[in-house]
Length: 137
Image (cartoon, rainbow, N blue to C red; front, side, top):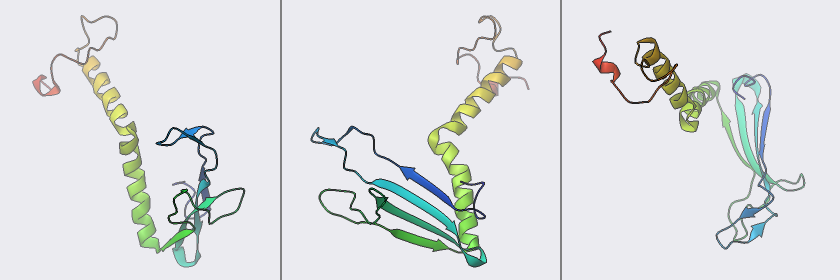
């Protein structure tokens, strides 16, 4: 999505699992799809539109008890769109845990390169031992 915008439109669809359980334990197969369409407009503006669709028909109600139905749309200026892109670029890896996994792998590699993995088997890492602040370099 980040690489396609603002030149090409993007559509993301979330379909509910076939057996989604509610708080009452009943199975619900009637949930509409959540559809996000991000479309470039003139002068660098971008439209973010979310809708609930069922069988290709938009404006569906996502709950049985009532509530808001789609479509909901926000049109951003070029600067606002750039800010949103940067927020997504940096927050999504942090929120999904990807950044933490990369940091842990980097730290493990540095610890092994500094000799912290010695005596723990071939390339082993126990996660314990000295902290990086105790190292001479």
